[in-house]
Length: 255
Image (cartoon, rainbow, N blue to C red; front, side, top):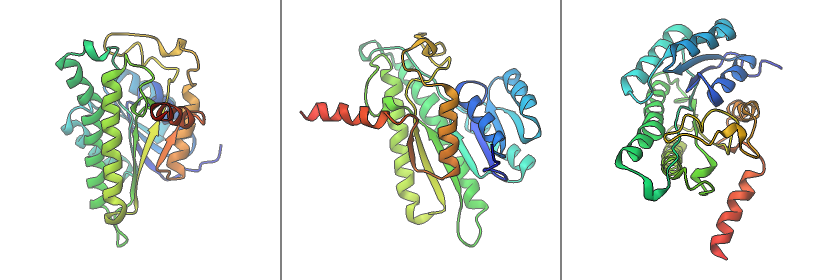
């Protein structure tokens, strides 16, 4: 593989497992330097050792703004800059709407919306502070879900709602920066079911995504996201069949 992202410095949250881990491996293979953020020191350390000097582990709880800001500072101190910030960390839930508690909804907002907001605000402040004569430059990548567009899994109700909120924040920021900072690209990524332990780690437990029909291999998802970074795309579904499925859902509502 050519080192198509050589020289890029990229922060990936939720890097210790699943999509974040696979993406970090893919980015390093393309020549990037990657700051690996997650809460698990053991898993992060092992991944950083596997990836070598282009990766560094930063133990971070992305639901804490101070942790996120400290991770930026550590990345800049080690690598000199941040070009791309990937908000990938998040968590699912297995609850239908009529089963949700206040705590359930609060957890989904904390883990899937506020954590990404902290990342967006922290990275954007860095892009602005390091801007040259042509203005701020960089890329913000938010990993959402196809479920934010169509409710194909009702038991993921609060998760889907939190990702829909993330979509709206992403699109609002993109619109805001279109004139104010056109050098900053805001990217939305929409995976479907990915063969990771996401389901096992959801509040309320399973089903295990790895056993679900049509689950997309995590390596394929990592390639799509890395391509979106390399080509500075604004929105990508991780599988070519997903846009038609979403469009079909809305066509059915109108029929």
